[in-house]
Image (cartoon, rainbow, N blue to C red; front, side, top):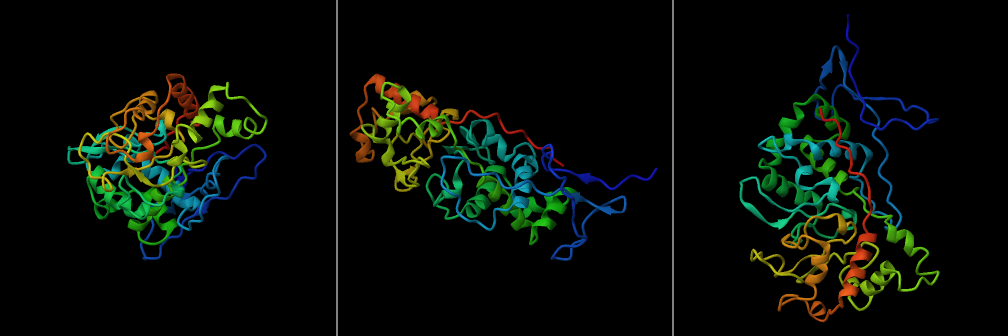
Length: 339
């Protein structure tokens, strides 16, 4: 019996009442003249890419970025979970940037087996970032990615791409994006990462009513916010609504002697902080409570604003309550079916 052409459907099932969208066949040849693989005489057919994730309430409008397209995000999601990117074939981006913890993690081993000096940062709300990496050495995420793939997964991009392009489904995705596959890998991962949003938390919903309706500071979350923006001075470096100034500061010990940016490190967003498993650039603090306590005993050469912070035990608890309310309790994203 003759087999029907294979249809690979990546889009989410349509909602009840929605009109089914027609599938988009990929053309036989791309801009470089490469022929697409065929199965039983027909080309691979890709489902229309799902729409871009919406920016949740509590965040500003995302900056316009022509590289962030539905098609790029659909491919980036697959690549993020695929261990074919690694030299060992045993590690993917998602292994270190754990989706269950805001795409963050602890200090990991690099591809060469040596321990990194820095913990795996969260990949949330990076659409508004001004520089990338803990020391801000990269002006764009694309620049960071090229170096990061080699250091953490082992192979340079020019070695990774032929391995991916040999997979028929990826070949079709690259053709749909257009351009060279090497650029397609970077664009896809960039688009996926820059659309990992964290907002619409319990605090975002409270903020719309609690502060305007006169809720008293006896509510520990509201009291924590008032401390955050006042006495504790957290808002100096972590201003709402992104809860980061995108700057570089020295606030915690540096156990590995990491040079950073003149000894300073990037201010991480505090959105999603309660879901993380380690804190500060070195990942040497393991709980949110201990992270708050760290500001009571800053290093001698810390930024001057940090040296002035003094909180009573009950105030520290209120600050933690606020930070927990700033974290969205969402189910862990489902790993896609890989080709």
